[in-house]
Image 1 (tube, rainbow, N blue to C red):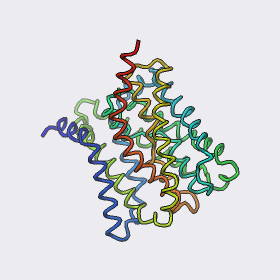
Image 2: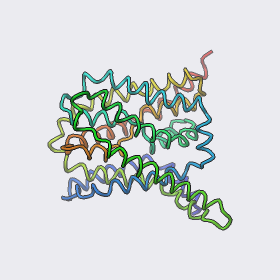
Image 3: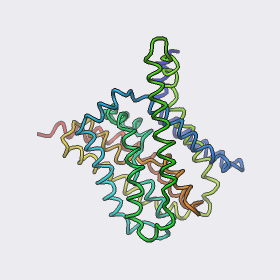
Length: 325
């Protein structure tokens, strides 16, 4: 089997692979004690996942994404203006306890930079500009998240939000993976360079994401017993968000005059959150366990189900837009 065929096979089977990873992690955590000890693996696995994801973004396409001002403007407006406004509107229904509250804010205020591309592709979106914009989305959320948390938490957030975890995330989840990806691309472009090695690494985004999902769920599940009530309490909020956020993204894209395929990409990005990347930030909060990881993982589970609805509904929105006068 050729590398291109194997990659295509993995990409077309991504959704069942991700669900199987989550199910296997739940089963393992239920039957085998001690899976919480996997937690130290989350950060290095995330870094590797982001490296192989960024490796799929040629630097020329990254420059093109930055020059596609309408798409980038709609994407940033949806994720960093409209979605925070939606979260602000949901504040009265967020848990009063600061720890579950900050967990909900962490996950809802950060757009996904990995498997959103998968679901957007399945929902007939133009994923090329979305994939190219991933480093920009990650950098923006790391810069703006402390600002949003300070605004939304107020005095309750004092002593909980610290800069070092964000600086650590920026360095190890953005700067280092992006620099390594750029170095590998430059190596592959040289005569006799590592083109075959980089092509082989192109097989890994799906397995790497599945491994991260597996480790995150397996590491967090044993700690969720005491926080089960908190996770169940925020689940309805996540359902409301899952219904409203893609509509905000779609309307924003239409206001920016984007074609339907790019509008669907913005809608998927608005709805899909960055739970895998923000979990280490949540775990760095004093006293976070089990409350913060519980509400973050609850969002992931609601979101994975919601994505199956999006891939059916989004193409219809686009079709309706094309048929309108």
